[in-house]
Figure 1 (cartoon, one colour):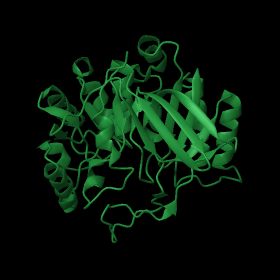
Figure 2 (cartoon, helix red, strand yellow; figure 1 turned 180 degrees about the vertical axis):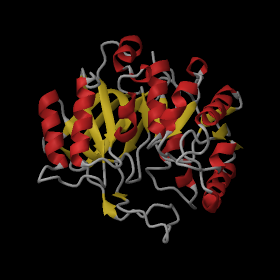
Figure 3 (cartoon, helix red, strand yellow; figure 1 turned 120 degrees about the vertical axis):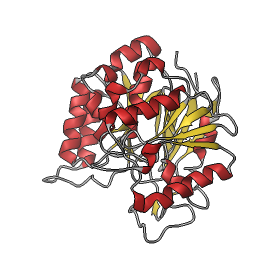
Length: 337
């Protein structure tokens, strides 16, 4: 059975950087995001790693892991919230105390999704794939982003519904921030390989493929054992997003995941928007999705609100989801059961 943390009102939030921290010249952004949480009456504990960055990481692997372990042990903290993603979180896995992971939320995306998936697969504890802390620093949050609090406040047995965004951000424009940080200029349109309405359901698992693919073949990425122990006889509904892989690298990664058995008994796959979907010799991302759908015999939905082209829906690893896609719009219902 999946175990679900609960974000209590005025909960303690721990800020730590198991991947990348914030360089000194950008500390004002982190300070602004932390102040926003305090304004909403959360108590905030900030670790050292959030404020440092050198050689593509916030600190040594052991220091990053120990700070995370300390926050996991701290009973006053109900949510561990990294400032953003990065590149080398995988270095910390061997030092993280998985035996003592507690039922508290960990929220983030990008490189953080590797840790999220490892926790859920190994401990059966739900984790939250959604906004970064740094993206909450604005005067307000867009409707899709601000759902993170409502989603994490649900209790076991509850159902929460989220809707596709109206618009998304195509490119980052740091020189022209908006009151809600993102420049939401492009019309959101969820697509299906079939070209028709799709209804999907299953246990959610996923994250950024650039990161989570490196769990394959390790003790941290045993999807088969997770299914057997925590969700026997239930299908997996995968949500995935591509940050920087070319179309052919995406194809190689998906074949690798398939050969590793990650897609065995999958009910469907959903893909987030990506700026890396550039054709290679006329081989398009739509070709990749079509081939995968035919090989697995499952529906595929793409350009959903997930990943590096925000805003994004808060997906809960381990939750039971029902998703309906119709006329470019998406409705995601997640039940904490």
